[in-house]
Length: 474
Ligand code: AMP
Image 1 (cartoon, rainbow, N blue to C red):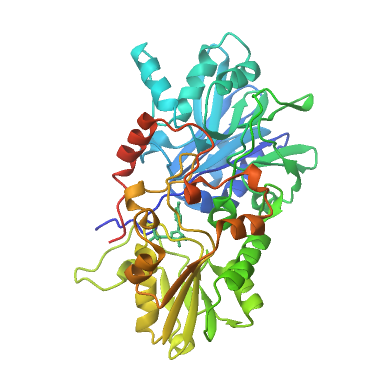
Image 2: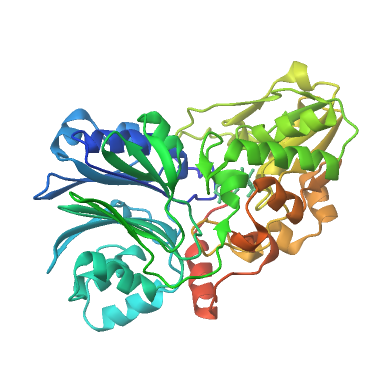
């Protein structure tokens, strides 16, 4: 039995929290279910009954990880949960979040979406002083800081995070309070909602829809929200910074039915597709999305260009992470297990093939080959974001620069590599305008290499080492 990395790149994480509902852990389970696309490696839930925190962490998908007895054990009216795909650290149950510790303040649980590129240095310092860690995760470093502080948990959290550069949308739970905090630049999303008298927080609003909660607003960059029996209190304890909200959320990560940074993902992608049609027209017969990531942009492209939108590739949604590889090598196997062409739609046609991004280029190459074999006369690949040229240090798992095809090849060289008849990317300006997020408030470092925070050589080297193990699709 061989394990093949189907989506060879690893995603980021999703967080969900609720305070003040008798079925807190069950609603957290449902919230995580809706956020499953943000991480499929492991998941976990912590719940509080007002006295004690209880934790369940499992590898795998939310639906398989939790059963009724597990959720029954997670008693209480407040809860936080996490779905994970590592952006730093290893793959094991020890890395699964939330983390739960006991210290001078009593029990504290934490879960984190983001990445702390400088936590490594702090961790080494703490280790030298004799600190013990149970995982390789950067998030534990923050817990150590909070545990060491003489201040109360709600004072210690901003005290520690004030010193921590990086991306964090974090939830903390103690027996009697839920604390949500977002870094001053707002790299990763975090939304606040209401369900009757209960408060909810989640990475994306699609988690609110599933439990019938109403979106209230985003947790603002630099804002800390404390929810306890006295209600919700907001403060801005972190130093103010220009905002750097990740636009890759709008291009790829978030679900199209979510609001992220208060804006509809579907609308962003539709507009990206429309602009792509204007900037990169193609003489073709039909527009075909690479499902699911290319669908919304393709509908926009088709609407703008007047070409008809056809589902020329069908996606199998039930692909597990582990499967038996046939002994005899089958060409395009890795991609075909997930995507299969609809021959009668494709045969003899000139196709505009739309995907959200090209990272290493291996997926696009295989898809183009597959569409060609299904009889396409011409294949014009269109990408609804600019060429990805730099790794992300803020919570999106991208490979090393050396593995990013656009960091090393021109658009024409990439076209040749993927064997398309033409290739066109959306411009940076076009993508930003389509997202509706102000250019001054967005992080586009993966497309222009300009990082909003300092990135030391040490952090870069650590990142490169960590990412050496990410295997490319076979
Ligand atoms: P490739 O060019 O072969 O590396 O694959 C690019 C495809 O992977 C794109 O079509 C995206 O849909 C998807 N993708 C892009 N970034 C990520 C990421 N960080 N994690 C998982 N999948 C991604």
